Image (cartoon, rainbow, N blue to C red; front, side, top):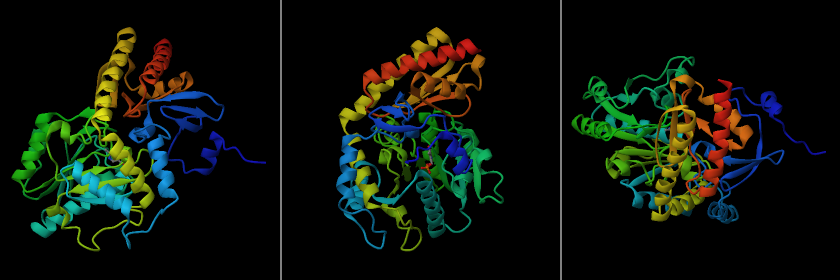
Length: 404
Ligand SMILES: *Cc1c(COP(=O)(O)O)cnc(C)c1O
């Protein structure tokens, strides 16, 4: 007899570091998912800003199938055509000249931070080792990236943390001025904080960081793991601001659901990653690269990017309509299809209570901290799915209000 896994099996077999919702989705198509019982859900969660083209998009399925029948993996003892095509297209479409490929956002940031430190040693000396990042920021779960991240609850309790890391307040240039100096190696920032609550940086803040980095010979690193690859309405969010970083990291939407990450930089900085200084067995994996190439080529078109901006307006209008009726949100914000709705004072800390109600009503969403309902749907979600998903979300919110 074949075995059908249950949600209880999660608690039985998996390490207890997650607490997934009770249903188990088994199939997806576009922005809809079905669970083991055949119940249907509209997906506003997008696998946490990963499923950039929804589920099983034909363009990605075809890329996966074709490459899957051709060549999967070689390691970096050899190079491969899909990796080279992906690197070429990323450099042609961004400020960057060089690309380091890996398998996740944390790894892309780990590479960025190690590169910045190595670059500083090469050009300025060992003393230039300070990395400045921001409270509430999130940069991954490796020990270096989680320490650079500004949420101590994620990095504490694991023994001594890597040194030379300073935290300033997001969107507060004065707090950065108090820390920056000629020993600053890099400033790492999300153009819009994702996990920290969907908080866009201001133009003045990012421009100020750029100026401070230039003044102090430090590198500006944009973590675009969550904002990248069309999510903001541009291929990368830095293009919305017209402010160019020295290093940019990408993952999540880059693979549309296939694990892949990339670190982008200039020729001059990349020179510090000399032979043997860094590496990854899976980095540049042919299957991952083929899927990412298909995703980038499909997403980085005027039609898809304009569509993201159009859908942003639809999401905002729907959320504002819900809020006019129920008064649950204090602020609705975001860029492109990365949206956050901050809970009003009466519902302080209750964003997570919406999620199981939404599941019961047939829509999946996310939170970003205890106070923000987050949405990161497919960049090509059909308008009808937005309308239906919002009707279901409104029913969930009605139930939250009724239970208050
Ligand atoms: C998700 C995320 C990461 C970590 O990516 P992983 O693929 O989970 O390692 C890093 N930075 C930002 C901004 C993210 O949103």
